[in-house]
Image (cartoon, rainbow, N blue to C red; front, side, top):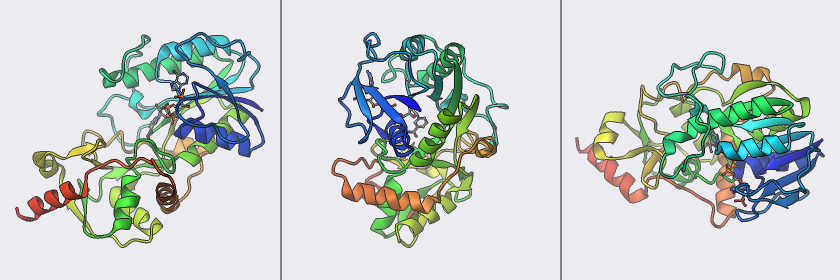
Amino acid sequence: MRLLVLGGSVFVSRAVAEEGVRRGHDVTCANRGTSGSVPRGARLVVWDRTRPTPAELRDEYDAVVDVARLPSWTRSAVAALPSAHWVFVSTVNVYPDPHPPGGTPATLALHEPLPDDVDLASSPEAYGPMKVACEEIVQAGAASATVVRPGLIVGPGDPTGRFTYWPVRLADGGRALAGGEPTDHLQVIDVRDLAAWIVACAESRRVGVYDGVGEVLPVATILEAVAQGVGASLDLTWVPDGALTEIGVQPWSGPEGLPLWLPRPEYDGMASHDPTPSYDAGLVLRPIADTARDTLAWVRATSGSTVTGISREREAEVLARWGGR
Ligand SMILES: NC(=O)c1ccc[n+]([C@@H]2O[C@H](COP(=O)([O-])OP(=O)(O)OC[C@H]3O[C@@H](n4cnc5c(N)ncnc54)[C@H](OP(=O)(O)O)[C@@H]3O)[C@@H](O)[C@H]2O)c1
């Protein structure tokens, strides 16, 4: 298969290119060449998507994988490469929050599409609506299309450092701060499992819309698996949503945020999509312990790897305030 990956040098799109090479496909990546290297065995076409499509990218690919956030990028690429099967990497943020747990693409409503490009740094709320527009552009203009809407993508190479916080934190040992209730549900998907499924969808020219999500599990079970993966024992202090908010801890991400903590019930739906249709379409997940082990190994082996989340000093302060109540 001649596979074109729009991107290919960062996290998801890089994992897709790597998987394509691993399966023996003829892989081309198109990017500006500024964020990193493409996998060994893949070819790079230098292209800034704010510029016209280069003549070198002719409409001769069997499949295209795109991770764009801006509708104009997807529009021009689909117009230039309409004959391929497209796999568009979207997001579960196409569903407005809150939405009911156990949802699937067949049951959940979408944001209104936003067909114009908006600066995400100043208007992050445009992310989901622009992804809806990108999905529509791909579905209308490509020969055939798979749309994959991932939830939290984790594993080696993650530039957000969100999940990465936990293997690193638990490997450090000691009493750790956990947010919300141990029974809150969450799901994660290893980037390598997502990539393998995306390439399989390209190979089979699968037509449909799927959530790219993992098994729905209590957060406590996920953290137990992380601890097991990094060979650590687990000593968690759970601080409820209200108390964390009162203390000023940010949920989910950010430099002093608490990763994997999502306030409830607002994000119950976002954190627990039904993965059954995706399993039925070929998605296979590895154990979370393996993801945690490999993520920690990646952090230790890679200078400049990103770990975000609450500092140890702030964590100790929050635990002391909670304990003193
Ligand atoms: N992380 C999550 O948990 C999560 C959850 C749901 C959905 N998603 C989706 O997953 C996808 C992540 O994709 P990703 O990991 O590959 O990272 P990405 O940041 O979406 O894309 C990075 C790739 O795009 C290239 N690129 C950036 N600007 C470019 C430009 N102007 N022209 C051409 N290429 C450009 C980069 O290379 P250069 O900079 O060198 O050009 C790089 O290869 C996104 O679609 C995101 O919406 C992520």
